[in-house]
Image (cartoon, rainbow, N blue to C red):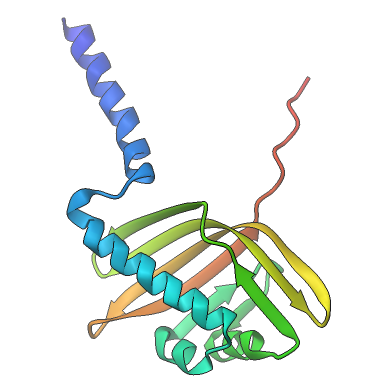
Length: 157
């Protein structure tokens, strides 16, 4: 009987993280939706070159680590996103996870990125980590980091 209890407990531990990653906790669904809505407004501001909104929502100590390995502070990230020779479009995320840590939220997502820079196309399948902090009742973006999703490694023979 003890082995069955241990096995059941282990199964619960294994399933809990999967359930959390698949669907938000119903108690937090309103909070998760608030973060997803904030994320969507943030991405729309980047796509539409809304510098005033980015200025408002990027924390003063904001940093972006882009897929090229460049670390950009708030003024440089906004300037980069406002360049007229650069276009950006993100498809809706195919995966998204939201984790709350007090007034800090970590959001992970997987999205297809499409864009051009000086006439050259860029994009592909990317994973992004985004950190948001509630400051005086308003959400701020503190960190954005993106990396291309690598192709699955061939099975070793």
